[in-house]
Length: 410
Image (cartoon, rainbow, N blue to C red):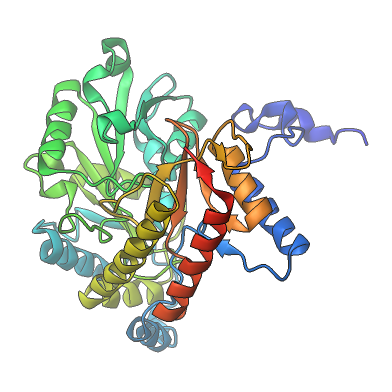
């Protein structure tokens, strides 16, 4: 079949004239295809899905009840634009209650239709062609993708085990720093599970001021902190002078799919974000914002979610440790990041984490996510579907049985 007349018109940022002709697959698409094949080939074998990266429970009943009430109110029809005051005020109360961070809801907070769109829009605020965004890898790529869309450059900061999974800010060369505008950090970190100490945040603030760089802290997993109380970058002295923090209602509030988040911090950056956003969307449905406000005002919701995933994580760490994996409780998130096996007892070898992950899905219906960006690691998520603790224990027992049968070698 011949190319359509517009084949030559695709933007270079998505591949130009070659768009749609590539054969490489996105990592998560490979996983989805392997899962479908495993289900088709072994319909009697339960899929043990540790690859899912989204909460397995519905939003709490009291939040859904508010949504049901608000959805029928005439005043909630129409465009929300840059948000309703009720949500911003609730976000301000949450930040003060949980982290001791004082924010002006009118000028230092703006809602987003989930945190992902916020990361897509923030590069438009700062990046010109040739500008550099400093990003940790492995990590969430959206800000990097949009940096390149604007002609910018992504400089990767690998998260290495030997550096305790912290970025080496001191090792960045002066020529990179001269062109850098953004530093993107993420704590608790996905996928490594590392949490940040107050000392590290202080170092980040100092680094930003010395190099005239804006900090974007991805706080999507902020409430899923196990080794220390949940914390905020903005609680660090001087942090609000150098950047913003992006929060999500998904991980800590079981509101996956509701598409609610917010950007908070320096008022001029928040204003610039709001200006770009105003030209990109017309705001989240007002009833959704008001339901999210109710969730933010209920401190028990994130506590209960945190303890649920802590319990599951402790079980998973124990199982994998008994199967030979080198792992321990992560500092936070619902992800366990552990070195991938190099082979199996029967002599099978794996060249990288992706090969190990594909084998586990294909041969044992155990789904994980591979990361080969900074060493070979597998990511196990504890967001698997299980109705109660008995179901969790049954899944753990089956996981242990299958892995011990394989005999992973490290």
